[in-house]
Image 1 (cartoon, rainbow, N blue to C red):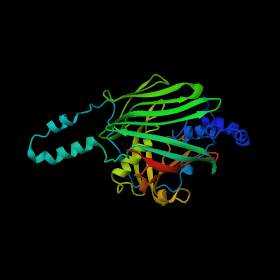
Image 2 (image 1 turned 90 degrees about the vertical axis):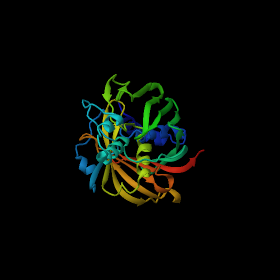
Image 3 (image 1 turned 135 degrees about the vertical axis):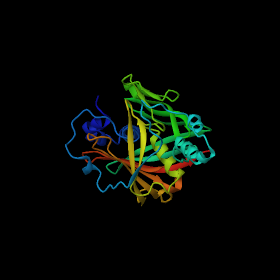
Image 4 (image 1 turned 180 degrees about the horizontal axis):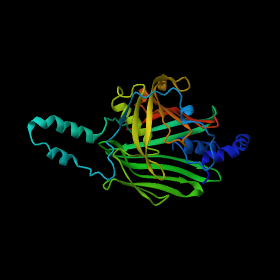
Amino acid sequence: MFSWIYIWGNVNEVLFSLKRYLPHPFILAILLSIILHGLVSVSFRLPDFSAADAIPDVVIKTKIQSAPIAKPKEKVKSLQDLLNEVVSADEQERSDQLADELKGQAFQLPPSAKVAYFGFVNSGEVGVGQIDWQLKGQAYQLSISVPVPFLGQFTFTSTGKIDSFGVAPDFYEEIRGSRGTRSVNFMRDQRLVSFSTNQETSFMPHGTQDRFSVMLQLAALVAGNPSIDQKGVAREIPMATIDKVEIWTFVSMGDEQLDDVDEKYKSTRHFLRLPRDKEDKRRFEVWLAKDALYLPAKIKQTEVSGTTFELRIKSLDFQQ
């Protein structure tokens, strides 16, 4: 199956020549499909160069897990089981430590909000899109829907709850027009994830995200304790992509002032996601706005060819 990046490469000149005739959502849907999903699988051969060439000047001082990552064959003990192991008052300190470990890292989720972004390809503006984040009690919904001429409606939705590790997706679904529906089901009571694309089931570590919720989870973890993510600190976040579970590592590149967004979103903390494996040749970055509860002010993906796809914040509307 060809990826949207491959499609973009083949019709790039045609799209720009027809730009005056095509509604912006046509291009924007492709852009959002690429960026908001992180990295898309490809079916063509990439140039052979090392991942280090794709991510220069990265120094990792330390790595931290955003949640305990148990091995599939290990028996996962409940909090009560662990506390029951404490047999004397002298071990209360250890009990508290175990409880903290099971709760994961501190996090602070933003209230419900609608965030609009300008879309750019190679610094050329291609339209505006909106992300809708709804938080109601201990439940959330994250969605975006874009009509695409000739291809139908593109819809990306993540729904779930908030648990002691942060955002806890129950169901992720993407509908790309006539290409049909692909989904990921999170069976949290069984610690399993199932995928519609290959009908397989995988073990689910605590704190596992989908490809849409991960940006909100990263924002919440940084907002929970901004002093943790200093330059060189890497956060490992379990991720359920469209067909497997893997670990995504975001390295803090430190605090930066952006010059291509509105003044109120300029102060950011820059993160670079490390390659998932040796075949991963793209560069994926996100800048979290300090004065917007660390919601993404800018998201950028750079292809092997040098083509860049960006989302830059246009407006932010927090809701009651």
